[in-house]
Image (cartoon, rainbow, N blue to C red; front, side, top):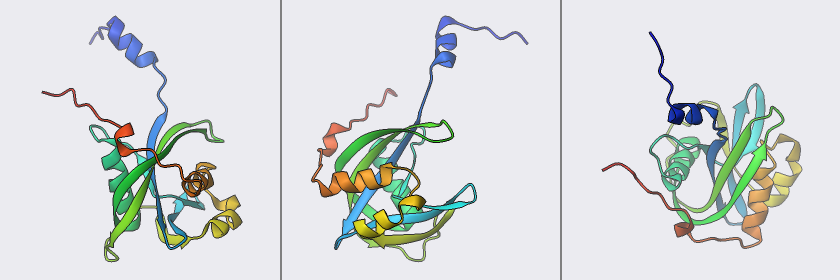
Length: 163
C-alpha cells in the first residue's frame, strides 16, 4: 500500500505538541484539596489534574479530572493561570489551572488508577512536602491563588468546528 502524503499531512506530522493539562485549586478553610498519586513508582503530591481529552473543553476537563481523582464535585470559579513546564524527563506541559469551589463529596466513588488518597493541606504543609510535589506548578498555583489571582472563566473559550 502506498501512502500519499499531502503538504497538509506533512505539516501536521512536523508540528511539535506539548501535553495540554488542566488542574484545579480547591481551597476550603485555609486548606487545599490535593492528591497523593503513584507516578512511575514514586508517590507524589499534586492538585487534581490531568490531560485534556479529544473534543473536551478545558473547563469540562478540569471538572471531570477533579471528580475522577478526588471524588469531589466542584464548580469552577476562575482561571488562576496558565503555566508551561519542562519535566526533568524532557516532556513539555501547558497547564490551565482553575479555581473551584468544593460542592459535594462522593466518598464511595473509586478514584482514578494511581491515586493513593486525597489530602486537604495548608500552604505550610505543602511547602514542607516540597520534595514530594509532582512539579513546581503545585506550589506556584497555590501561591497565585493566595495572591488573589482570579481571571474570569470567560477568558477561556471553546469553539466547536463541527456542524
